[in-house]
Length: 450
Image (tube, rainbow, N blue to C red; front, top):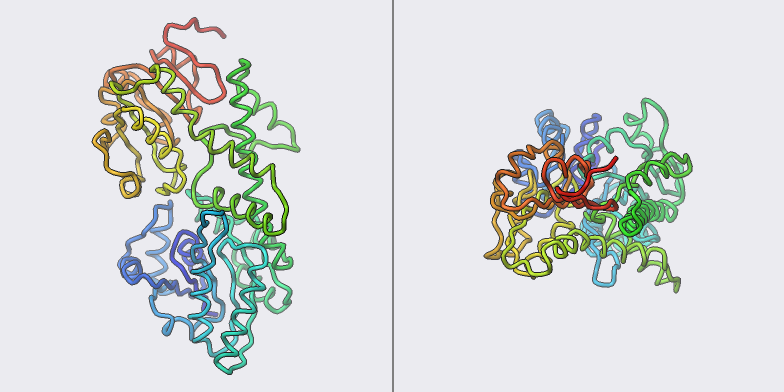
């Protein structure tokens, strides 16, 4: 079979490369000619560990091709994975404009049976809409060509997407067709050598599962951030609370880490989309509404700590911000907490010095030019003459910072840890006024008690 992947964004490129890695013949199609030309020359538009090497290897071996032409790609395809962008509108509704535009281009050119696979995150009921749309397009051509529509949502974590794709914890196939299910199982068979992880269900349930899973993850994150806020008021330590909670087998440890809120391309968009979908059915979702509200509030928490520390007026202060992407392992700046922090500090007159190991280019494209912003090439350059350091993204290279050198380069000694990377007592001993999430702050002159 020839597999066509429409869209070379995050999901499409990773999916196409991993399918090729497992021996399939894959064509990745995108109407952006410059993007396709860059991919053909080995330039990867996103940062994802392991992806560049995989794309290069499979392109050289001929299993992975890139095309900007539907006329070239569609006649060869047996299965078409739809991996186009479905962004949220102002009301939270997922936009399907790109999806149906791509579907029309395919349906107008298909000459033999084809399986359409919705890889993009789409509202419940989209498979039925896709099937109806393709039928109408074929009818307008006065042709009868068999086709099936399958839901196959992705569960890729940015920064670990290649690993997630190559070793998935589950693969959902939403279809009412036994034949289509067997084709999909054969495609994913190379990924299932250790044990079977394919779950077949109806399309609506598969579409719903994607939204429900991401909304649950968002809920756990917001719950822990709300608990962290209470711990700061009552003297408890959220890290110790997390350990005690996670030891319960019904809860577990994953996604129990407090921080600065969730961001990226999935959780914010999917929570909004699910609430909008519920609204279409005249159902309120107060839990998810609270989850979203807590998340937006949490993104302001580090800035509020900095503002309180300096007394509200930051016109004479400089803050070094370490980490800009919404999480380590990616250059994705969508809904990144760093953006909220930067706006807070600039609004009060602070100077900010920015550094991220990977996301500098992506960040510079969305952060407006400002006379108080300095872009730096290392963490040590960022902290030069800074009154405070704010750790926003927990990149590995920040785990073992040279704190002696940091203090020597800084003008002040305040350290605001938005990811609870360090031990408060150790940081105070090193000479920092240390603030974290869900734990009481410690100052360098504070009595250190066990």
